[in-house]
Amino acid sequence: MRRGRFITLEGGDGAGKSTQGRRLVAYLKQKGLSVVATREVGGSPGAEDIRQLWLSKPDRFWDPMTEALLVMAARREHLVKTVWPALDRGAWVVSDRFVDSTRVYQGVALGVGVPKVDALYKEIAGTFWPDMTLYLDVPVETGLARMKARANALDRFEQQQVAFHETLRSAFLGLVKNEPERFRLIDATKDEERVSESIEHAVQGMVDAALM
Image 1 (cartoon, rainbow, N blue to C red):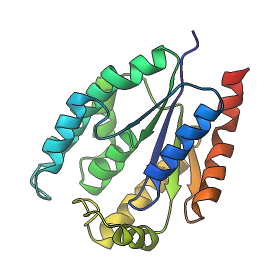
Image 2: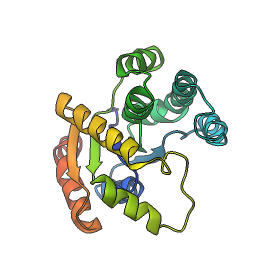
Image 3: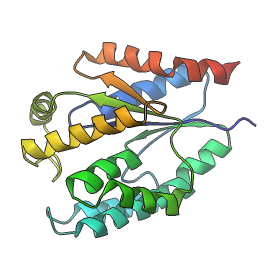
Image 4: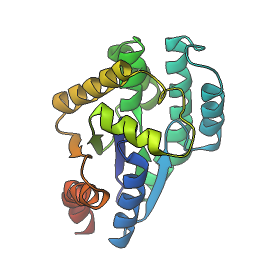
């Protein structure tokens, strides 16, 4: 059986990752592919428990390295219980966030350092990386305006000041520039339908190869 493919969506708050993730899953299913939709931090029972513990505390409660370790522990559970079994049985997996969020949030914004995050990731995942990462880019002001328009409460990362979000965006764009073979830059300022079209175009080659 042919191994499945692993696609991750990254981006700042308000970029539309969750919406576009659902649309991508629907698109892949329409193509006849078996697809698993998941998220981080979370995506398996144990990982969801860690997520609740992590987010239940106020901002700056956790030491940055402790926070990175918690996230990596959840990621290991996610990989072992959800991602790898799905890929092994030939399903495609679409995840709303993955390790690049840790590289940016804990690695850059909280000062742990991307090399340390990458070293931790290598311990829990070896040489495994997403087949493709879609980075949905919006200016910080646009993303925050979208978040404020939502009815649900903001989590502690979404409540950070503009400078924090600018740091995150700059770090994400740096990853996109440095790892062009994996990342696809998606202009998420467009309307929902046009963003979906851009994503479908980005994954088309991979889909076509899987269906041959």
